[in-house]
Figure: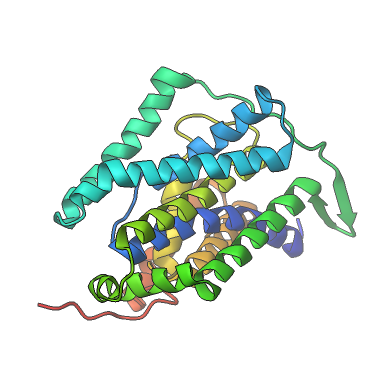
Length: 292
C-alpha cells in the first residue's frame, strides 16, 4: 500500500488515541492522578452507544452525544465516590484505587450487564470507499477524523478561551493558590473529569464504528497506548497528549504495514522508552522541579 494510504489509516487510529490520552493528561494536570479507570470509561462509551442504537434506534449523532453525556456523568461519579475522599492521601493510594475502579467497571460489565462475549457494533453508516488514485479512504474514516478534530477544537476553546478553562489552568499550575483566589477546586476537578470522560466516550463510539466488535475488556490495550501517548507527548500537557496520540497511531500503522503486525506493540513501547531516555518530560513537556 502507498505511504499516503498508511498515513490516512494512522491518522484515523491516532485520533482515537488522542481523544483518550487527553483525559489522562487533563486529570493528571489537575490532581496528579493517573486515572487507570479512564480506559474503561472509553469502553463504557462504546456500550452506551451500542445500547442507544440497538434499543432506542437513534442515529449516529444522538448516540455519540448520549455516550459523551453518560461517560461524563460516570467520570464525575467515580471522582466523587472514589477519588475525592482520598485526594490528600499518598499518590500510591489513589493509584491503587484507580486500578480497583478499572477492574470494577470491567468485571461488572462482563459478569452483570452484558456478559464476557464480544458483541457486534451496529452499522451506523453504509461504508462507501472513495478512490483517490492509489489511495482509498472510506466515509467512516472521514467521519471519525472530522469528529475528533471538532472535539479537539471545542476542547481548545474551552481550555484557553473561557473562564472555566482559565480556572482549570490556574488549578493545574497551583491548586492552593487557585483556591485562595476564590476558585472552587471541587467543581473544577469534577468538570475536568466530565470533559475527559466525555471525550473517552466519544472515542468508544468511533472505535465501534471502525472495528465493529466491542467487549468489556476492549479498553485495556487502547487505554494503555493512550496513556503511553500522554506520557510521550508530556503528561499534563494538552497539545502533547494530542501529538502523542497521533504519533502512536502512525507508528503502529506503519509498523503493521511495513514490518510485522506482531511487532507493532513492542515498537510502540520501545519508542516510549527511547524518547523518555533522552527527554524524560516527554516531547512537549517541560522539566519540573520537585520540592524536597
